[in-house]
Length: 306
Image 1 (cartoon, rainbow, N blue to C red):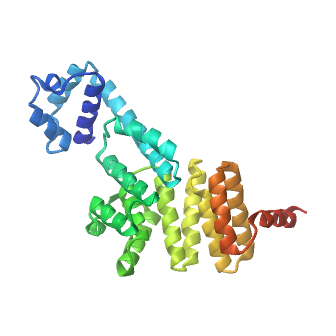
Image 2 (cartoon, helix red, strand yellow):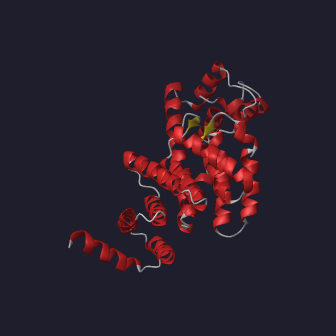
């Protein structure tokens, strides 16, 4: 268990119980020492932790159990915030962001995740350029030095994958192949079980290989994303995976699988029922394949079942 994360959780509970910092640390440690615990400069000794727990009036076992529960809750909130950003759901974003801003983010990695979400929000609303995104994200994760690491968190990989849209040349391929190796084996991913994060990474890898016209790799990474989603019963980005697969099969002149994937894309969109997303995908599909999407579906069903 990370001592700094635990110290931040103590601070969260202290604030919630309306105890001043001065009263909270009195007779246990100095305010300066308490800030060192929170910044990760040093570990909280067990006896100090017990003293803090007593001052909060919460048994140690209950506090530690609630600590893990709160971490999971914040993980889920940040995923919802990121989802609101990428889907441009402004009202939902504002509602979730208000909750997060009024809280204390416990986990250091989630602080980076939150900063990254704020960067992507500015980008999605055309407040900053691709180049500025590249600079901000690179600074956040110390890119390209981070590529020398042997182990990565899922959030680090998410941020790295966003750079695929902003860098070029040899560094682009180096990053793409490094991410591909990481994500196909997952042996070097230290933590993270977020289906949304993993689906987003796989979507970006599929898109990147499509730009390189490596269509077998597009299909490969889309299939990994679909398989993971079916296993967890969380269907993030299924419409995008089927759309990318349809593009890949179309380029490979495999028209049977192209039609299958395009129809599945349509089915996922209709099941979700997001009118804005349906309109956005319809425009993309009709431009890419030079078809009327609704007419394609009608003809597909006739051929399949009549």
